[in-house]
Image (cartoon, rainbow, N blue to C red; front, top):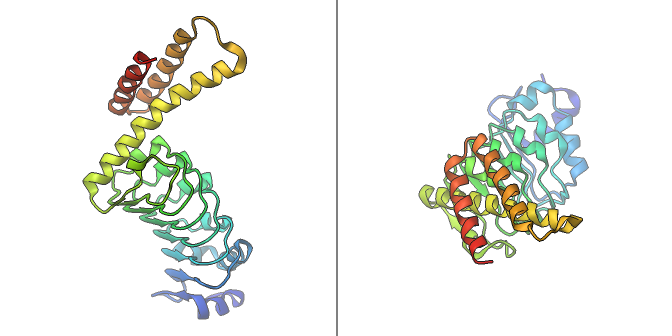
Amino acid sequence: MMRAEARDISQTIIYGVFPKSPEVIKYSQRKLTTSKADAILLALSDEERAGVKTLNLSDNQLDAIPGSVRLLVNLESLVLAKNHIEELPEWIGSLTSLMWLNVHNNRIELIPRSIGNLVNLGGLLFDANLLTRLPSSVSKLTNLKLLNLTFNYQLPEDYRINSSSPITTQQLLHKIAVDEWSASARDATAVWILGGHQTPVHRDVRNMISGMIYATYRDEGWEEVAEEAESKDKIKKAKI
């Protein structure tokens, strides 16, 4: 039986098949803050939280994803559109049952590498944010069928698509991985040089760093993408 403090909440915002374990929590357009959203989820018992499959907190005043969301271990759909969220926490990757993630129209600049752990994702809506780059780990989202990156004007233009085609989506994820990994090698070299290590043979140092990075990628089982990124990097170095 639901605890008394959660019962009122269930009558207004929780709709589910099983009263003891609500499957859907919907609380949109309520001017909800992050702390209030946390309080709502923490008012549920462990059993009730384990039963939640869908959480919709869209069109509120969230400035971050409530930390208690990570307690929804069986969550399959997370809708946080039209808020003021600035970042995705690293723990988002622990929600491995997620199949749908909608953070449309927020203020997110970076996506954590842990996003690659969400291998069951079929839909990912990041449109109308402030993304500047994407982690190479997105290439692990092999079940992704719908991807929307439109209206992220700091991203390369060919990333800013709304694709409902599984083939197109996977092609883009592959391209992102290649671009990001080759950029990682260049960034590592830039850090070396800016750190005061620039020498007349800095290209050799750059090659050494690049080689170490690509070796790491191969060790992680991404040999094909790593080879393509390395080939792309060699072409750029030849033009220097």
